[in-house]
Length: 241
Image (cartoon, rainbow, N blue to C red; front, side):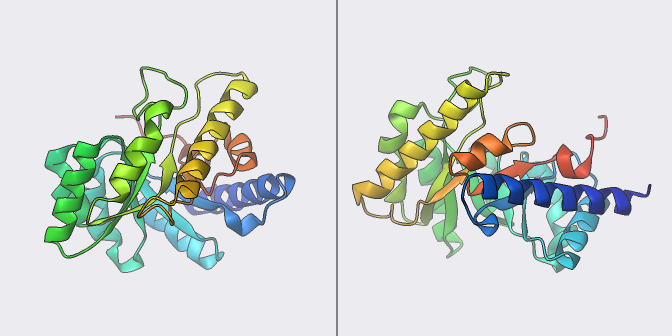
């Protein structure tokens, strides 16, 4: 099987899986967007996936964990005009590089980063969409603000000029216990709903819930995910470093 055939089959299968998950949750299939996490994938494979998705009328976003990979791949894919999201930790010294290409940053977990991001966005005379990353599992290996601090951070970030608060992101708990994973996703939804209900300035568009990957997307969709982030489920195994 060629790489193109593999990508086509995986994209179709993933889209069908996402549609089934939405239907089982009583939601419209189009209410959940697919973000392709292209970490370590060669640019030719990413291009092929984007072209196949366009051919099949499957709307996709592109996500990069590392700004250096974003900067390396984005110019080669600019003709396809993908919507890039930064989905990994963003260091202050990489903000300008990220803003050249990223439409959204899903990994904001401090007011300091938000303020620097907003300042740089204003200097570029643009607004950048941001999601607050929340560590719902409390695992030390994961980034993100603690759930108990997320609402306060969100309302503060929403007031930062140059930013548009669009919602929240999390990585599900690393466990085989579905109840634990489900509870974490439900907690993120509750945080989102509380922020929306607060009426705080700049929070009215904070509707997104970016949560769910290949192993737990059904649980995430059932709890209201609006974006799921999938990498190997579409691209196959990551190339060895």
